[in-house]
Image: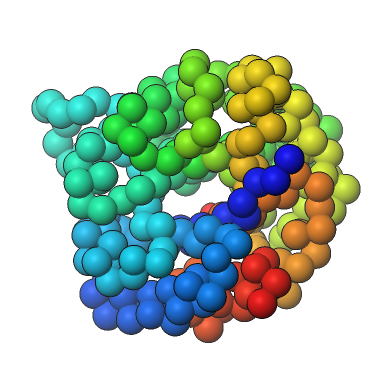
Length: 248
Ligand code: PGA
C-alpha cells in the first residue's frame, strides 16, 4: 500500500505579507520533490496571496466553520476558504480544542463540511501529558477518532497524531510509542472506514518536528508525513525536513 508522503506546515498566528517570501524557497524544493506533497497553512488573511504565489504548494487553512454560511461573526465557511485558494484545512488542532473549547462533535461536523466543500482535511488528535503518564494515551486517542471521524469514508481525510505535551516543547515521544500509536490509529481507521479507505488515509506525526529528528520519524511504520509548527515558519528550517522526506 503506497501512500504519498505529506509534509504540512502550520504557521498558526504568525506571518504577514513579507513572510510570503519564505514560500519561494519552500515551493522550489517542493517542485523538485514530485514524490511527496508539501502544504503550508498560513493565517487566513494570506491564503489567497499564498495560493497565487506558490502553485507548487498545497495551501491550506487552520480551521473552518461547519456551516456553509450564516450568522457566525468572525468565522469562515469551507467554501470561502476553497474560493480563496485553499485545498486543505486543519480541524481539531489541540490549541483550538483547548482555547476555543471545541469538542469531538464539533471537529466531526467541521471535517464533514470541509470534505463536502471539496477540501482535504487534517483531523488532529493527541493526548495530554497526564494521560500519557497514566498509560491511557492510546485509549484516549482511540476515543477521539471514534467521535471525530466523518461518518462517510473518503480519500480526502488525513489524521495528525499530535501529543499535546510535544507541541512546541522540544519533547518527542519515543519511537516505539509513536509506532504503537500510529498502528492503533491505522487499525481504528480500517475498522471505522473499511480496509480500502482505512489503508489509504495518511497518518502524520506532529509535535516538535525539526530537521534533526525528521529522518528518524520517517522510519517509523505508519508515519506518512509530518505536521510541523515552529520549524515551518522559515524556509531555512522547513526545507531540510522536506529534503529528508523526499529523499533529495
Ligand atoms: P510544533 O507544532 O512543530 O511547533 O511543535 C506542531 C503543531 O502544533 O502542529
